[in-house]
Image (tube, rainbow, N blue to C red; front, side, top):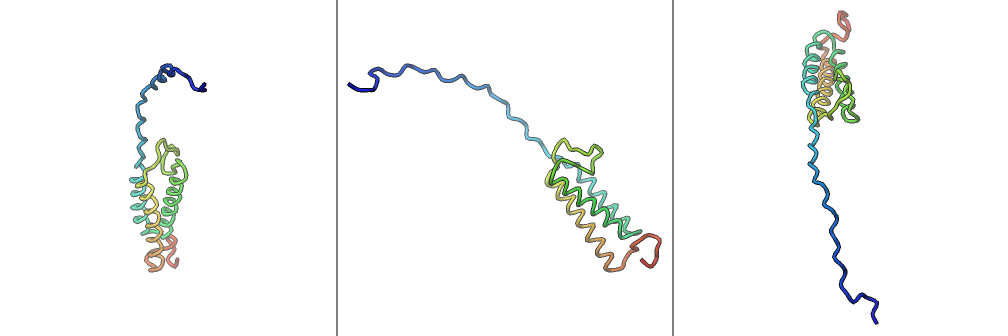
Amino acid sequence: MSDGRAYPRPYVRPPPARPVRVAEERAERSNAAVPVAVVLVLLGFYLARYSILAPAALGLVLLFSGGSFLSARLNPLSPHFYLTRKPSWLAVGVVLLGGLGLFYYAYTLFVAHAGPFVPGVPGL
């Protein structure tokens, strides 16, 4: 005597087919910070005529904004302060490079004594 069955296994129905889901659209990333960063860099270059502190301060704002882009969806450059879409890597790079560029510009002006440190004070 054998332990196995002498007859074939009955037909088993396949499980019901899963409903076909439409693939979710890939959330596109936002490039909205790029023009704002470019305007702030140009503003920093313009304000360097009056004080070396202006490009340094705007560079600091851009660096903090870039760091915020990397850590969360908080956007200090936005009027709504919270992004519905994440910023693109291009936007993060432009903001960070703009901040570093303004810091470098302020440093070169400081080393060359090419501009006033405090506006309206001739010796500084």
